[in-house]
Image (cartoon, rainbow, N blue to C red):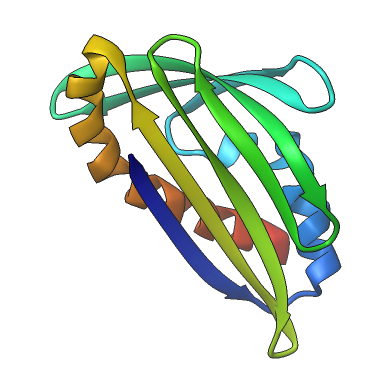
Length: 144
């Protein structure tokens, strides 16, 4: 399993962070390699990504399901591969700190089956970069 986390201090109230991260449609387009997403229901959405890694082009489809929301401190989600055999989860945390909010993005993914041997090394390299870029982009949008 690959895991990554990134924290950033944002000079805004915790409630403002919550208002943004609690609505997937506000930050889905900020995920690196994002192509599209559609809302299935209030907790579930399907996302499509297209990216390149070491010269290989790959389209990935996955399901994101919100499993826990604790306003205004955190939102947890599960990840399930629709195009490939992988699963995982993640969370955004918002902690009031130093007159602002410390926001932390956490993601973990594991790949199984035959494709797991190919996907796991790429996931381990890409996940920290994606988590950092996504968390930083969300922070910039919240501050804008």
